[in-house]
Image (cartoon, rainbow, N blue to C red; front, side, top):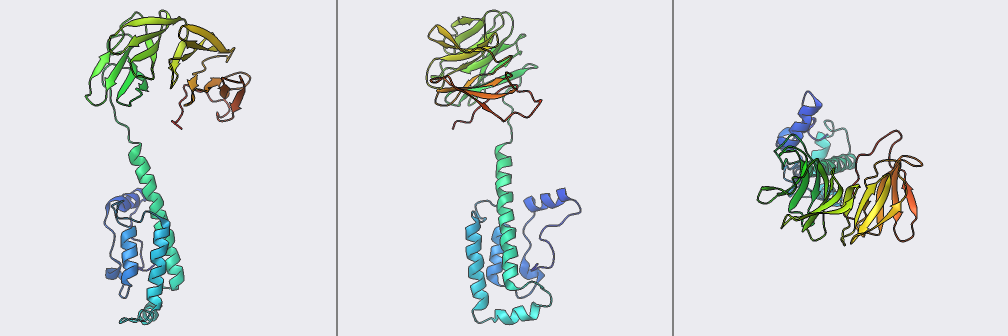
Length: 307
């Protein structure tokens, strides 16, 4: 170690982590005489608290370290080799080892930077506040509104919230619970499950509400059409402009069917013959089982990334 001690110290690991994230970087030249300015610059840039000023790639660190090594081996007004010989007793590692240690330290900080950025992205924000239960959020296609089921007015109804204005709109008020909202591709309609009669849809603009299919639950609009997939009596069905057909005979329970982004396949949870996630190719009818659910675990919903 060039300075002879760690740059950030603390009695506990949590204190050290807090010091890394908040405290300024120590100045090497104050801890040891004769530290090359190029090495000092590399360490300071590596420890900088601003992500924009820190090294963005390990290759950049390696490049600067190689340049620093050449400077240390090149005679100048200050004889760095002589300085190194004078401080050799205090620093046991040779120059190459020192540079390697600095490189490893820089790579570790780059990794910490990525972890910190990920943590910042994943910080949740509360967007609803009314009622005891607000659940099953669904993004509108434009990403500006959020549909959900809430008991703010008593039983569970379908609401949506405009995320820009912060206003919430109640869309349904029927007898019993209304759950599992899903947006149409044009963002004008929301389909949902109603205890009283099955799959329904409501217009976001006019409030017109009608039955799509008597029975069923967990509806999901396709991404590029007005087809709706839902589950009923242990099977999976698709409603296409009033025509309903069954595409999976039995899943032995809740299946939570969803569309793949290209609408060519369905992903669902099946308990038969084993508990796992399955993928149905709608064109060929072939079903693949994905071995991703740990043994004896239950699934309470599915979601896919946009890709």
